[in-house]
Image (spheres, rainbow, N blue to C red):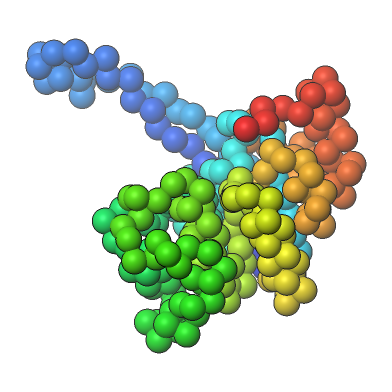
Length: 251
């Protein structure tokens, strides 16, 4: 065990079982279970990685490389097929727009809902409530159901909750830039504050400038395996070169 590691990953594997039913009638539905075709999709193939306490690590790779699956395993959305994941401290996951939000609850109600899921008491959430609302810049909409929010508004609220709950580890999937230029700068400033306070950050991004801006280290995932890890400039140069000089699959 690495005494300074906030995240320890050992021989981590994740498989998904895909069933191809081909159901198009009641008869085929009744006989499907016996004749079903099952495919094993191995997304992560035995990766090992330590993320040190206070370190900011970016994960790059083509779509389907296993990046989001890795974050979901760290957030305990999925269970590993084999291998181990050890996380030391409170985790704040920001994995996709609107994840964890109930569409019929208001912004305020979803702040409390998410806060409880992340391990805070109601009084702890109440202490942070005004800070979360102010950071999100959604005060005029905070008492309306989030089903009325745009994708950018959902991202703002989710990001604001994640960075203001006092988490030790922040997991971020493609949502560092969640609004206009001014709000994007605000997010980067907050990331810098969290890093200065000793928070550990693991994030996925296709945006190379974001990686250069905030990452201490970069990990390149390819076909479920770690191809390279090191300083961001070296890893990104190899990643881009492997794509023929083009940034692969920018959103």
